[in-house]
Image (cartoon, rainbow, N blue to C red):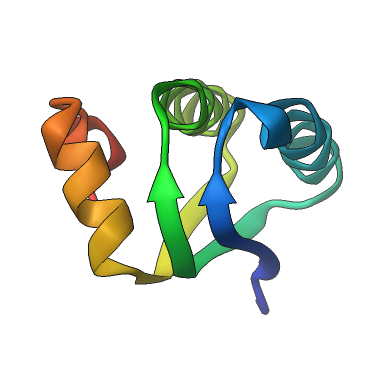
Length: 90
């Protein structure tokens, strides 16, 4: 089964939260396997990290498989600083 890609890029701030939420919710309804590519994220804020954590919980509860394709060092560091690295588990 080929995973459905979701691409995160640039500065992932609260300004992008609503659009990302809609994209994630649609993917959750339509697909059983999703792959997130965060290789081009230059910055991530708390709202996006919380949104991703919630999405991963919803996906697990719905039986949807989610994997990370690639994650930028900036995203890894932002998630680590927020103490969410165990939850997002890249």
